[in-house]
Image (cartoon, one colour):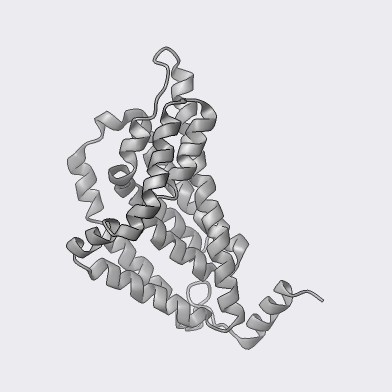
Length: 240
């Protein structure tokens, strides 16, 4: 059954992937390949995107597990509402302050080794190198990924979190595959216009989190979270 979570995960990935082109697209477009082998060119880019997907799935499982702890502690509603409010605050924050985040010394200290590893893998050009480049690329600081991680946390368990982030990754596939193959033909003006719609998408997602956290009794969209549900989750996590 298609749920709001599935829709939001795919939507964040698909509509936000144009933002990805600006952030990590240069890496994807510049991936090496032997000019004489078209099949290598295409497969290499598929391996690269599968690497990104692997990282997103792993992050989803980790943060979904964190979310399950919050469910057991009875904080699921509060954390879901908080995530929605944080997303709204991020959207309303002026760009000049957001840029400072990526220039922060701590962020640079984390991202620099990752970028160095990517540059070293570029020299190899093998399928395994392409896959590892994708894995490392998925670890680079990215606001869009953080929004998706918020969805994984609110999912309530490791499996759901992994599925959420996997769907998010799959949502980015069409644009990212196209960018890696037809990158030089992508119209920058079109990308900018669609990027302007991304904040609206994030606001809709934030509203979805807030409504869901309020537990209004709306099936699928905002179901009630009863004490029995929390107890059942705790029993599943701590079998006797």
